[in-house]
Image (cartoon, rainbow, N blue to C red; front, side, top):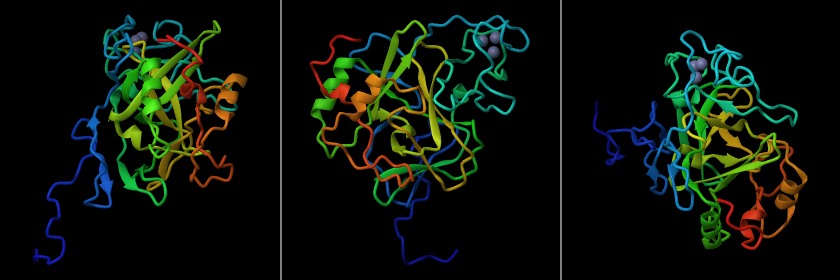
Length: 300
Ligand SMILES: [Zn+2]
Ligand SMILES: [Zn+2]
Ligand SMILES: [Zn+2]
């Protein structure tokens, strides 16, 4: 090959944002550009203020020797989670709550090929972190992703409520907020809250931008631990080069109750949304319950 005068610093190895820790390397665009450094973790890690270790095994396994089927498999409490093509069956459409998902875990007797093991297989598609016009870095797919397939997790430090408040107090309006609150409404009326911050320790999920018409859907999936993995599935067929996005407010995840809505609607300084969707709400969703220190205390 002829020597080229331009690009003397052309890297010989392609940058992998995931530092070799995922099944598939994650490239960056444009070449040579690199996001601010952060510590990569494919899985949640225990952060300050929480007493549950997300790496601890808390669920017993099933004793299925052949196929795991609802009715006989203790991991499939409601119905099957995935079809034969590893697609999520219940996408909680039309405001109906998606059923909780429990995958087979390390203590299960079933094989690694069990259909109820999807999120635990990790990344399956070639994804790329890229520079967007107005939204900083974003994440896109380089290949077609069929509706229902698992795309990636939103993984990072699992925090207690007081630590979340502490970190939010330290943020300025210019700082992007990465902390996500997932509220699961349990049948008993109880609400399970999980707080995840991938800002300094996290996976590629931290590059996802918000959209008011997202192509991903976030579902809490439990495998070994009571702490759910925040798994993002394709909400529709996604074409190569399409930016991946989800709705930060979690509207897709659960029916929003009136209290959640109030919390999101209470103005304060809101950040503009640049998602470009027809139904765009013009501002990024905002969970004011996290911003008022007197609201609640000692939740976790
Ligand atoms: Zn089973
Ligand atoms: Zn199984
Ligand atoms: Zn099982």
